[in-house]
Length: 125
Image 1 (cartoon, rainbow, N blue to C red):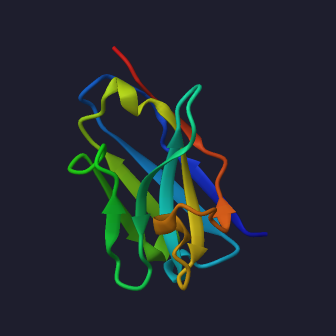
Image 2 (image 1 turned 180 degrees about the horizontal axis):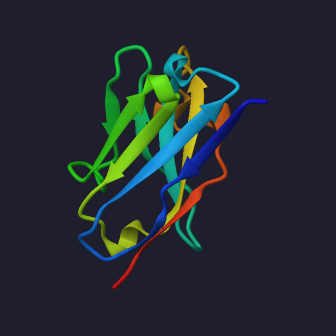
């Protein structure tokens, strides 16, 4: 069964940090492009980042650029989203998603092939 499972969410104060994990089962993440997305209450889901499997490059949305960083541990078949300098407006359910390495859905804003169920991040004092 192909599955993505996010973890690492929680409650953090403004200015704090969290590291989200996205573990894959049933397929090898290294062969897939990875996207991180988020959805705040009452808002549409928005893209956070897209990482290419081919060259490891990552596109970040302006609202997280310089604060969020993605990484990958192929031995653990897991990708990470390191979130620093968190702001209240970062509060959302965060999702990881995967697409074929030959696809450009993440960058083009199309649907991804596989989605996790999300993890809640709340930034509040």
